[in-house]
Length: 296
Image (cartoon, rainbow, N blue to C red; front, side, top):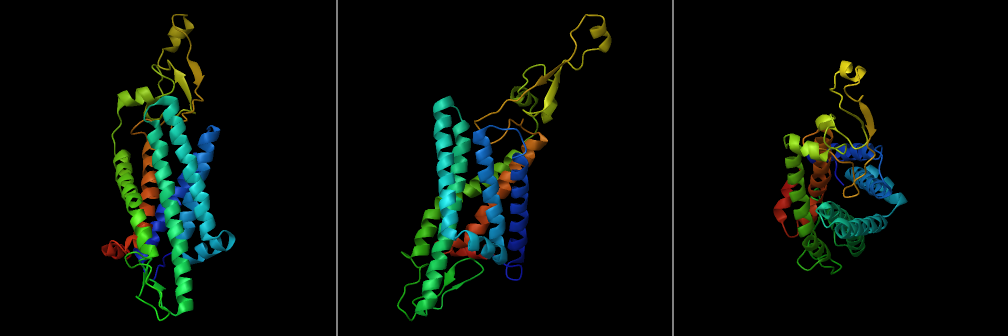
C-alpha cells in the first residue's frame, strides 16, 4: 500500500499501470474464446483488479475486509496451479513453444501469491510486534524497521527472519517479472513483418485482412478481383469467410506481430509485470537495501 503524500510517483504510476491492465483484461473477455482461454482471462482480470485495489490503503482495506490477505494468496496459488496445468497440457499436446506462454503466466501468478503471502506475514509480524511493544512500523518501502523489541522479538527483516526469507524466495520471481517487462516492451516495438503476418492470419494465403487481422474477424478472400470479371463469369465472386479459430496455445486470439492489437497486448503485459515488480521492491529490502530508493 502506498500514499500520494509519501510516494507520489509510485502511487500514480502504479494506478495508471494497473488501471490499463484491468481495462485490457476486460477487453480480452469480450473476444470469442474457448473455455480455457475464458478462465485464464478471468484470472488475469482478477489479478489486475486486486493489484489496482492494493495501491491505495482505503481500497485495500475494503477488499481485505471481504477477503483476507491469506485468502487472496490461496486463490492465486490455485490460479498458479491452473496455468501450470495448462503449460503441461500444452507441452504434451503440441510439443511446441506454446507451453512457454502458460509457464510464464504461472510464474507471474506465483509472484502474486508470494507478494500476498509476504504482505500477510508482514501484517501478522507487525500486529505481534505491537503487542510485544517492539515498535515495528511499515515504511514507504513496504518493510518494517527496528531491531529487537522490548518484548524480545527479533526483527523479521533481519537475516534468517520471516521477511528476510520471503525476500530470498522472491528473488527469482522478481527477476522473472523484470525480464518479462523488458521483453514485453521489446515486443511492443517490433516492426510489422509481412511474412509473419501472412502466416499468422487464420484465413491463410489469399486473405486480404492485412496486418490487423484477427481470428474472429470476418475476412474477404479475393477482394481485389475486378467486379466485371466476376460478372463475366471469368472469376469467382468474393467469398466471405468466418474464421472462428481459437488458439489454446495462448490466452488470446492470434495477433500478427506489429499489429495494433499485438502492440496493445504487449504494453498490457509490460504494465502487469513491471507494475508488480515495482510494487514488490519493498519486499526485497532486507536483502537488497537499495531497493528502498525506488519508493518515491
